[in-house]
Amino acid sequence: MSALSSRGDRPVEDTVMLYYALVFLIVGLIAGLLGITGVAAVASQIAWALFVVGVVLLVIHLISGRRTLTP
Image 1 (tube, rainbow, N blue to C red):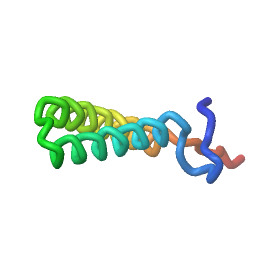
Image 2: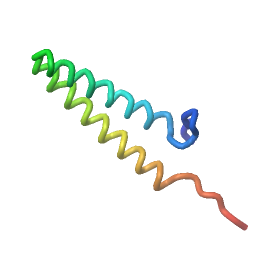
Image 3: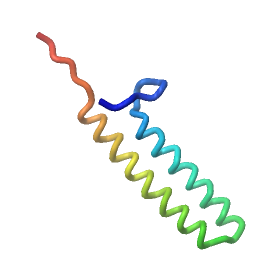
Image 4: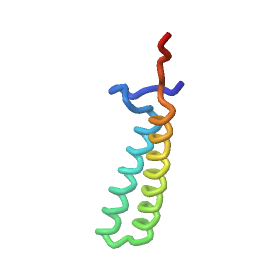
């Protein structure tokens, strides 16, 4: 059983994963604007990987979510 976020609809792991994906995306965009292409490329790849993993975890959670059995 995974912990839920304060809204109660997403697991904390998914929310944190997508948060860090957004942070790395912003870092990559700022680095790209400043001309630091190496940092921008690495940050963009990390953001993409975290986004994909977060979405996969979210889909798995939604598919295997809690189901109540009715007698």
